Image (cartoon, rainbow, N blue to C red):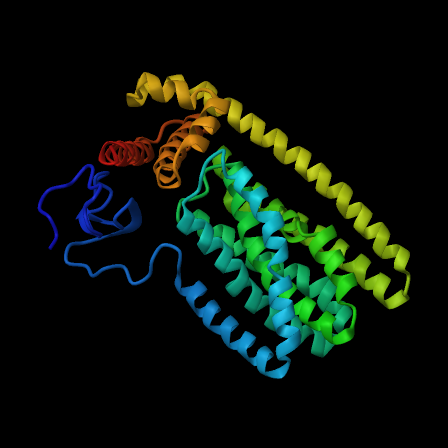
Length: 391
């Protein structure tokens, strides 16, 4: 049953349609923990898919599962080895993405969706296109031309999907979602590469190159698109125009990497692989330095804005003390039990979005501010209820 009044803090209420507290629609879906992007009229049915799924992802998962089952039938041993080793880069890249995400924690469902988009949607579509190009024009064309174009396009669409859900608020968000999409794509691609390497007897070389030396290759390529989209959002510029140059840089760096490996493989010049790997390592450290500087700048600006946010949105002195000191905030979070961290992260994320909102160019936007302030109110209410309920 749809309630007649608008609940401002439905924490503990079962999932369902409630009056939209931001008055942007008659009703908004409450998933039991937070408000979602699902809005509509009265008497609507429950949203068909949870937030971590979408129709493209669902179709991509079905196609990917069928493909993997066919590979298991054709070559079970090599495919199993490839699937196991393909997870290794996950444990290398995931901690870095989690570290980046501390600036403005993204919803778990959104990160899972980005990962699945990269693995199922981008991975499957790119695999089909690259296979067709390889059959018609040769492996070199597929590696140097087709792969950079189609793979970066499909991964970029994963970032755009997050933007469409209003989950990209600035530069760091764009980079984080680029990393999650690219990580999902790399996992599926590594399964195929490692399985093929087992068949050819070159598993050790391929594993060292892809899993040890260059696990951040795809995140680095796609980061250009995330950076461009994040800048467009932060500066209120054209997303399409910025995404175009970001996509161009992603394709260029991807093509340069694939081209060097293709040349080394066809010419037998093993030194070329070493040079390419060395250049990639230098690019990696340059990217790391850039991201660290961006992250520190975001941290500094966030903590500087906390007193202003406190006056505008009624934060307590304890909240100002915690969120106004980055090291204290991290220490407070580490001391919490895991269930409580989720509520803490929601408050942090809501504050970070409001901080980004007040830093953007382009004047005021009362409707957006009301929406973000409502999210902060819901997050604080949920955290308070969780704290008092556990005593």
